[in-house]
Length: 189
Image 1: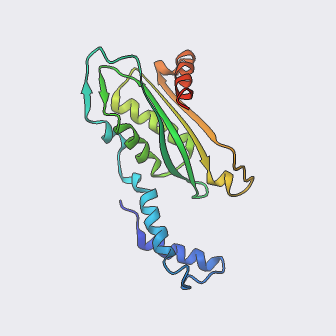
Image 2: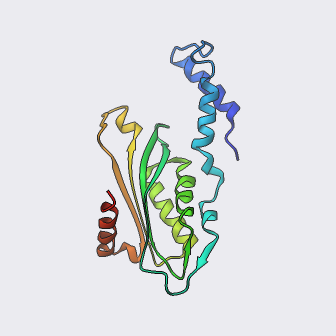
Image 3: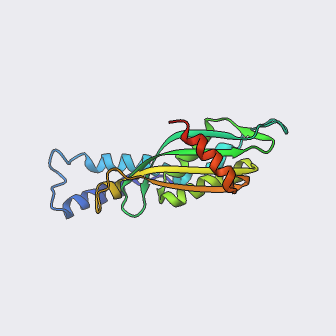
C-alpha cells in the first residue's frame, strides 16, 4: 500500500493549526504537501520485501572466502516513538555458504528496512534476519551506529551521542569472530 498523501496533508494542516499556526500563511502553505512527499520517501519500505533484493545470488561453490564485509553504508530512518529521523552507518558482514550476492544489494536491504517507522534495535535485527533468510550464510553480523533526532533535538539534547546496536547469527555470533570483524570495521576510519 502506498502512503496516503492526501490524508497526511490534512493531518499536517491540522497539526499546524493545533500549535497555533495558520496553515494558509505563505511560508506554510506548501508544508503539508512537502511533508506528505517526505513521508512517501521515509516509509516507502513498508510495501517491499527486503529479501527480494537477495534473490539473484551468485553460486561460487565452496571457495567463497572467509568473510564478506561491507562497511559504512549510510542510512536514514524515522523513529516510531517521535517520528523524528535517525541517521547512521551500517556495517554488514556475512560468511558465504557457496553463494554470494552483488554488493549493491546489501545497501538496498538496509534502505528498504530503514524506510519504515523503526526502532534501531529492531532495524538491526530485521537486517540480520533478511540476510540470514536471503543468503543462507554460515554467519551474519550487523552493526548500526546512529544519531537520533529524539536524543539530539529534544529532551536531553545530547548532540554528541550515538547509539550502536549489533545483531549476529551463526558462526558470527561467536565472541572471537565478532571481535575480529569489529576490528576490521574500526580499521576503515
